[in-house]
Length: 382
Image (cartoon, rainbow, N blue to C red; front, top):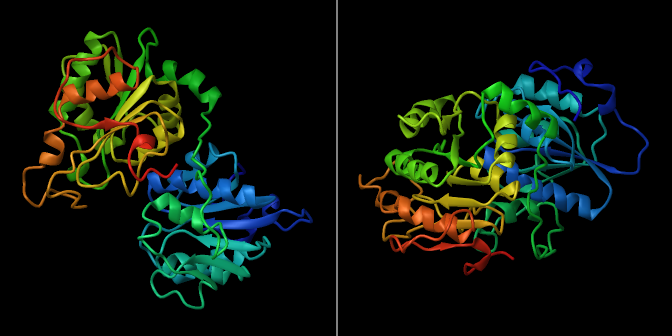
C-alpha cells in the first residue's frame, strides 16, 4: 500500500501513483466506515468488486484503519481521511475532494449513511456515486439504493449489496473477509513485547468500544484465564490503552502466563498476534471481526447486541448468546442494571465452547448456554 497524504492534504501531497493512467481496470474509491469491525466486514465488498471485473480499489478511511487495509490484498491504497468522526469542516472536505478528482475514479461507494460522508466524492466529480439513501443525500449520491433492513439484516450483506447491481441478488455464499498477517512483523513481536512461545496462547479481547453492556464481566475473564493456565495455555490480553486497567484485573497475580498487552501494541500488531494465537475469547467488538477474518478459532460473547446483525464471519466460531427476555436491547449500559445477558454466561460455558472447537479437552456440562458454530445456526447466510 502506498504512503498516504498528510492530514492537511492538498493536491500536491498525493503520490504519482494516484494520478490517472491508461490501465483498463476501473478505479473505485470506497468511503470507509469508522469502526474496526465494519472496516473488516467491508473487505467482503472489496472481494465482490474484484469478482465483478478488473479494478483498483482505494479506501478513504481514518488513519487508524491503515494497518487493517494493508492486510487486505484487494486494496491498492489507503487514503487518510483527515477529519475526525462527525466533523464537517467543508473547506477541508472540498480541498480533499478536488485532490481526489485528479485521480480519475470511475465510481465511489459510500459505506456510511451520513450526508457528510457523501460530500468528498461529489466534490471530486466522480461520475458514479453509489450508496444507500441515508441522510437525504439527493444529488450527492446519484446511484442511490433503498435499504431494506428486512431483506439485508446483516451489515456485511448491506456492504456487498452496494457492489452489485440494483436488481442483482446477493451471491451465495457471501465472500468472507480474509486478512493476511504481516509475517515480518510477527518475527519481531515476541522480542519487542517480551513474549515466550513455550505455551500455546489464547487471546482475550475484554474491551468493547460501544459500552459495558457488551462486555463480559472481568471476574469471569479472570476465572477463565486461571483455568486455561492450569491446562497449559498462556493468555494474551489485547486491547487499547483504555483496556489496560481491565487487563491488569484479569492478569492479577498470574502475570507469568497471563500477559496484559493492552496499550502496548498498535492495531497491526494486534492483528498479527491474533494470527499467532491458538484461539480467542472476545466480546462483540472490532477485534472479534479481526479474529474471524484470520480464521482463528473463536468464542464470541454477545450481551446487548445480537449475532444476527453482526456475526463473526467464520465457521470456526462458537457463539454464546443467552437471548433472555430483555435482549437484544442495543444499549450501551444495561437499562435494568443487572446485565444478566452477560453475567449468566459462565466461565464453564466458555470452556465448553472452547472444547466444541477442539481447543481444550471436553468439560462436564456447564450452564444452559448454546455454543454453536454460526454456520449451523438458523438463518446463517451460507
